Image (cartoon, rainbow, N blue to C red):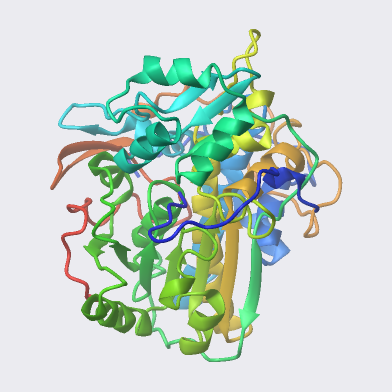
Length: 507
């Protein structure tokens, strides 16, 4: 999610893609693959993160193989992002523990369950509603538009942009949208700070999966040894993210032992159900960066942080002195990971966006359209979840690289549109395990273990990768983490606490 807490950004009507260019883990036998083959998406993701190609031989997959069905290779994206994250965690565990890199064995059932974690969540038996009545696809005078109005302030802005009363219902909204061109709706919404995107066809433009660079040469904060199940123990992560992608990243870092403190502005509360899903392992506090006292507290937290993860639009935090260059200058050695919706350059870079809107804007909704032409969706909010695991992987790799390769800070940039571009244009939908041409890193054999003729995996049952725990919100049923390597943690150390109620201090 890339909600901006302060002033609106700038943008133009041109589309972004027009720019240039454990008990719950089953022990099913790994599936066979041809000798010398590699899982290309995993190799591509690992190479994009700067990982050493020879470590790919540590990766294998097992479990059900008919998951996340789609006209696009969603399953391959999902397992590759989790595999890359798992391998990055294993690499850091080896560095801090002094042993070899543990084997990574990703269970595809766990991956598929985690990629729809928000749909599996129940709170005291209640199933949360994923999308509000004013969110969804709507017919327009010349096509379709996708709206996002889950948050009250976004719903109010959308209705105001269309000259509708604040209590207008979905039928009134549909009537107005049906009489206007899609792009006019899109631009009126954008001007009002609301969220609506015209459904667009797939285009050929490609965006990077991740951008990363070394900043300066300051040595990182020394760390002691760590247990293999907590390779990020002692790492302090300041979390300025909301909704799914960023919180999935920081939830994963918390799983691996990091002290993660989420910071939100007091005036934009997070939905309880969203935080109940993504708040595992973390603490949460509220600070107003425009308030002098709160800002002093925040600056003290940042001064002692190892990692800063943000998910606000490009430029949104600059007014608070948190532009990447300024942060790097004041805090050498910091790992800064930034997420936006539409990419870091081009006319749409400053716009708000969510997974569902990016799917509409880059052509995924059109690609997945049904026989009647109604826009379709992916079987999971895969841009959010996939990007979240890539962010966590990049942070973990940066922590290792700082201490084993080149010192200095790290600046990592991701976008939902970049992950969408990879899904649309970078991942071939060929048979599992088959390599299709060269990859960014040299292709190596992916360890898959079992010989041909192994027993088929059992049918997929998500209950095998679900657990229940008590929390401040009530009894939660939740998806277990899919990150998997020898010795990896199987659940979070703590349930989510109430949003915004923790003290703004490091443990």
